[in-house]
Image (cartoon, one colour):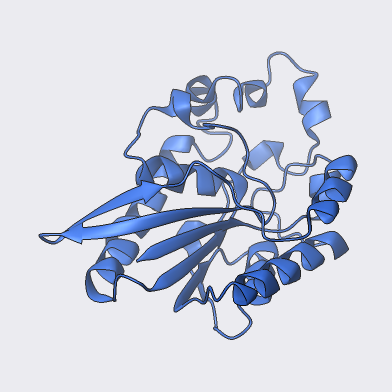
Length: 224
């Protein structure tokens, strides 16, 4: 079984560097376009999906619907984005101006952010726990019962997807949480699952694949 792990398309809050978290922000026009183009390119390459899981937030749900229009997505609350609590809705520029704000450590020191976020926002420990539950109780049983050549898609968010990638790689060290950085909007990591003696193992590509027009990507990067 192959897993295609997708981050949602762009939103107006992405462009404004505003913390979205659980805020239910819709895709903007480029976000819709990159998702639609990605879906068309996947079909052109004869890559089709048997099951699609998505966060219930509309930016992820709409991305999933545009990527795989022939399959009804299954929403799962365990795939929702990290809740940023009191930091949500504020811009990263604003938050980074305060050296005492826990958010200043979100990228540079995830372990410290995890400690300081307690009581203010959802912790990374909480995020790791619920994403582990999704893989253990939903994905692993699915891998054991469907053909090895089947493809599934998981459509989620920047931080939530990083937690899934940590689990796929068998890494629980929060210092490595961000790996090579934030996943591109509509970027796709491909993870292969192997089942042996009932045990499920995962192999993750290091490349974040882009299936939409690169010129659109360049245009979006200038806006972000």
